[in-house]
Amino acid sequence: MLTTPIGPAANSSSALSAALWRRIYERVGAYWKGLAVAVFFMAGAAATQPTLAVAMKPLLDEGFSGAKPEYVWQVPLAIIALITLRGVCNFFSDYLLAWVANNVLLGVRGDMFEKLLSMPDSEFKKGDTGRLLNRFTVDAGNVTSYATDVLTVVVRESLVVVAMIGVLLYMSWQLTLIILLTMPVSVLISRGFIDRLRRINRDTVNMNAELTRVVNEGIDGQRVVKLFDGYAFERKRFAYVSGRLRRFDMRAATSDAALTPITQVVTALAVAAVIAVALSQANAGALTVGSFAAFMAALAQIFDPIKRLTKVASRTQKMLVSAESVFILVDQVSETDTATGTFDGRVRGRVEFKLVSHRFPDAEVNTLDQVSIVAEPGQTIALVGRSGSGKTTLVNMLPRFVGPSGGQVLIDGRDIESISLRNLREQLSLVSQDVVLFDDTIAVNVGYGALHEASETEIRRALQAANLLEFVDSLPLGLQTRVGENATRLSGGQRQRLAIARALIKNAPILILDEATSALDNESERQVQASLETLMKGRTTLVIAHRLSTVQNADKIIVMDQGRVVEQGSHTELLARSGAYAGLYQMQFREA
Image (cartoon, rainbow, N blue to C red):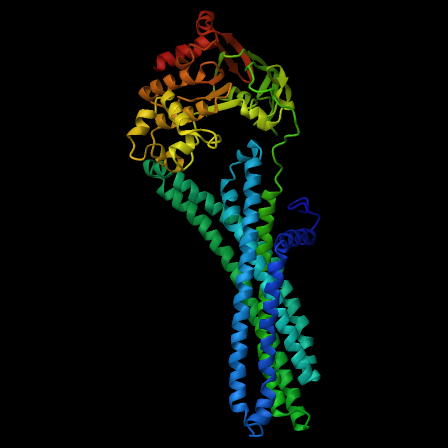
């Protein structure tokens, strides 16, 4: 595939359009055999149109005069045969083009989803969910449907126009010359609308993405809307986006609608000139009634294909704008993974952050500033501190969701930057506050990623260790019970324990617990904490916690503030120092 840059990197609008055309039809051209057969049938359909016009001359000059009485049955049968042939050709060409379009759509969406899964974690933090969803649901469909529509119109109608012009030239080259002189005028008028339609369609695509975002937020936040009486605010947001979308659609419709009557006026002038010249030729005996009728029949049939060819500009611009949006996603830079190193089997689990610093793009200060921490195999290290102190950024360096600006992250003495992402992440497991479960069965969610290896016995053993098996067995469908979208059929504690069971199945030597119990009530927290203790046995565990009561038994507690380690030690040692940790603990104790 060509990788011509899409977006700001393109040198000009024409270069951008050329790149988009090339990339779209490279994909369409991959199904050239189906296209070739479709074009064959389109040519067959186009060939039937001029024959009807040609039949007018002998019909009027000889049929109605009685010179050819056999025309009484020959002409009607010929018309039936031609119309039937045209219908068959149109059916097969439309079917084949739909087959091409759907296969191209399948490939485009596959490439988009593959890129989506490989995008860096930082891209998802931009909060562009509405635009991403719109690219899959709307833009990709527009690209493939308009690509085949444009191809159909351009090929089929061009063949009809060429055939009709041939008939017109055969009937009267003088009259045909008048028609040909008016065609460039129509083309120039059409081009005047193209840039306007391009801008309008780009605005429409952007506003469609905004509409998707607003509706998605309304669905996800429906409880907040109801509890905080946000109906008026949400209606206002939706009305604004819908109103803007309506205005863009009306502008496009106005431009599209104006193109037709303007073209028709030019056409009317051409027809008027044709009639005037034809009458003068008829008076001079140079044109028969049959020839004039055949000419006008062919002329009447040429206007519809020309109109469809002029209106294809609107579809073309929608296709190009949607293609631009689609290829922006396809061209996204994937996670950088040039490392080829691997660990020899299962790691021991020694984790070291060595003078690690990090600064987000455009930030004025470091999120982390020369942090050094060591976790020995099997140890539990707790990271505590106020929000924004850098705890999450630090642990996100382990799976390389975030890269250090300086320093090194080592596992068993090896820099993780030298280890391939896949092999590195095989050594890690995660249980976070925001549990991600898929709308599938409990068995699929517990065995996720290792489903091809995890047996029912292993899944049940993991659920037992997570204190969830009794609940699962009480369900009518047991392991085959679907958890629903965002696991809405489960309580918070049940979701957490399901995530713990998933981590147990993976059996990774290094475990990250990110606020795993902070959103739970006391009873659920006790149940989840018991499951976590089972999960943590024999694993190096990094725990991010705001509730200090959950990390009192940690081997080492690291207190962070403004990206630096300000204290470290056991719970008892830190309390005895009466420092930052003791202050946090006393504050939570008073709140409790």
